[in-house]
Structures are given as structure tokens and as C-alpha cells.
Length: 168
Image (cartoon, rainbow, N blue to C red; front, side, top):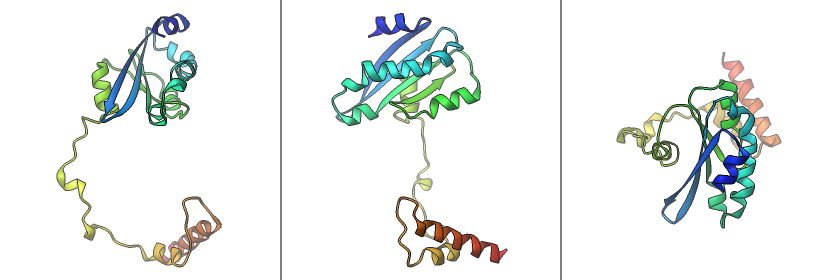
């Protein structure tokens, strides 16, 4: 796949790694661009190429849903382009890397979250830190609020707005 990919997308190189978490596989592709401006023209086609040539052949849903594309460039790009790429939900998680880091560092930061350090105190929520809002509690009492937004949800929201306006 590497030779065909690099022939298809001139000015790029591609590497691959598989990360095991227990018995689950996570798949990462590292696409390096010789020029940052190539990213805008190629990223959608690269996403589709990897989805068609690799992702559809994965044996299980977990592997298919845990596919990462890391677009490596040598300098920052426009913020709106980075946003479009990283917020595109088709086929894979996409991340733009615009500084020199190793593939292992990318996996540690973006997949394993090895750099995430939480102090023990912030892990536990103290019960006295929660204060119930009587406005919200009154608005949702005796209503069936579901995951999807329903008429009941909108009615509860309207009641909350009215109660908050009265309190101002």
C-alpha cells in the first residue's frame, strides 16, 4: 500500500503503526507532506483512499472505529482548514501535527493520553460541591426527558427560561 499511496499522492510519505490496548487494535497512519500547502488539496482524498484500501478490510467494528490519520506538516496552517480536517467525522479521527515529533510521541499524546496527569484531588467530586438548581428541578419534575430532544424537553427549557427571566 505504501508504494501505491506515495505514487498516488505525490509529495507525501506514509507510515503505519498498530497499537494494542489489551486485545484491541488501534490503527494509525502518519502522512508527512513535503509542503504544507499539499494538505488542503489531498486530505479528503487521502481519507477516502485509506477508508477504501484499508479500513473496510478490518475484521471488527472496534478496529474500524479506532483508525487515526495524523497529517504531519512542517509549519502551521490556516486555523479554519485545521478545524475542518480535525472535525470531519467520516471514517477516522484526523489530527494535524505541525511541529516535529516522533510517531511514538504522537501515539502517547493523542491515543494513549500518557501526558495527561490529574491530581488525585481532582478525580473525586465532592458531594458538597454540587448545588441543585431549584429552577431546573421544578421545570423537569414530572416530565419524561429522553436522550433525544422532544416536546417535553422544549417545554422544560421554556419553563426554565421563564423562571430565570422572573428572577432577574
